[in-house]
Amino acid sequence: MADKSDVSPLCDHFNAQASTYERRLGGSPRRAISHALDLLPGLSSTRAPILLDNACGPGFATEAFLEAYPDAHVYAADVTPGMISLVDRLVASKGWNDRVKTDVMDGVNLHYPNDMFDASITNFGIFFFSDPDMGAREIFRTLKTGGKAIVTCWKDMTLLPILHAVQAIIKPGSVPIVLRGLDIWAQKETMEMTLKRGGFSFLEMHEQEVMWWNQGIDEAAKGLADNFVNMVGDQWSDEEKNGILGVTEQVLKDQGEKFIVESEGMIGFQMVAWIAVATKIP
Ligand SMILES: C[S@@+](CC[C@H](N)C(=O)[O-])C[C@H]1O[C@@H](n2cnc3c(N)ncnc32)[C@H](O)[C@@H]1O
Image 1: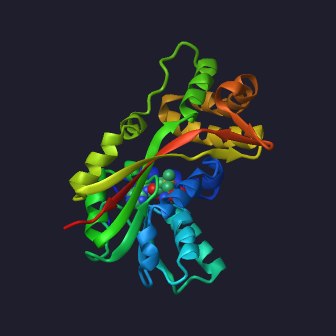
Image 2: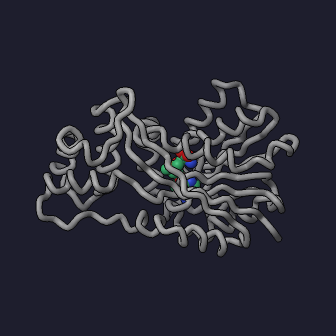
């Protein structure tokens, strides 16, 4: 079994919020996956491809892969049991039991053999790993020679300036929150160097807008507020955290023009992802 000591607090957080994950991210992970699939054209010529959905969350990539490749098999792994339960539910509802194997597994210690997968995707997962270099090595190791790995992270997140506007109301005068992990991964070199240290000598980086859409201000505020509560963590008191939802709603209503794109009644936030496509060359 993987040693969970480094990941258990994160695991708790994803476990507790697994069922609201899609709403909290305004559908953006699925949009990134759809762009990622377009970057794997060679896969369509592979018979019965075997794919890894690494740090799979609720299984959006698993679903997209199986729909795009009717003879594909997917291994879906995530360190959070709550997420794997969601994938199991999806698989049962679609009748995909013989096409998907799910595993509670740490991405830095995959229990799969070398050279197993024709392609793998780690969508918005690698920056959570306790050791992203080791995670990249595991992605490389488990990929077949010539196989492609898609690995994504965030380049620009509109939600950070919104958090700062909320912070200015709840904790006026405080230093704007910096999310160091996100800052580091926003730089293209972080992904490039991590994958190179993992063994990938050939990779392409794509910058891709991945809009975050919500049905209206209420849904958008709820999704943002859930994320903000996680982001401020123990730095804010319970009372301050309890105020986040109301203040986020207020910020979106009063200062919306700075942050929001509106289209057909939908509220959008502009998010940009890095999508790396790395090829295994021995
Ligand atoms: C932002 S979510 C992305 C989920 C999914 N890939 C998607 O496209 O929506 C990050 C996921 O990484 C998982 N995760 C975090 N640390 C992990 C680790 N060390 N090993 C495997 N999964 C991990 C979390 O449980 C969560 O499901």
